[in-house]
Image (cartoon, rainbow, N blue to C red; front, side, top):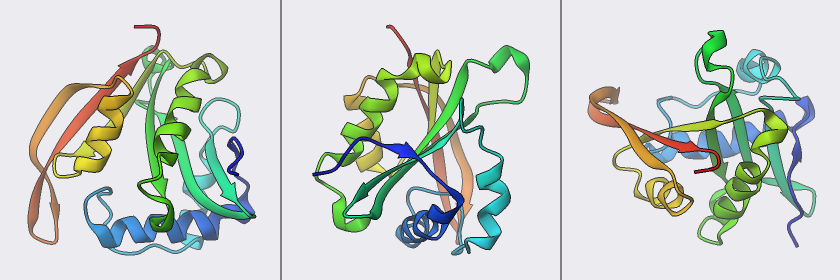
Length: 166
């Protein structure tokens, strides 16, 4: 059974990066175009506030199978209760409602992280993520047509938002 999530530790970074690199290969869920290393992501990891904007993981038999990060939406005080949310699932565990469960758990604990608004940045061709976020009540809040160029492929970036309590 997959337990609830926990905060990630720096020792989890290689497994987090492995899942992320698989997403880079897929080409639909991240703007990174080339695989990254755990060493290259250390500063990103340390920039997360473990109390309010953490990186969270789910494990199965001691192996990380999903991770989710909360990041400041914008670095101004006026946006302190808004967070960008990212979720990545190990390829072997996709399609098993793990992402839905994980996202719902974090949405349910929005108060714990002092969040009133969640924002997800999703490419318009990432049908799986769009379906997931819509299912949990996220709405399209913005569209940036052709803003991303991944290996010559222009992509529209959609901003999906969720207002806690509505």
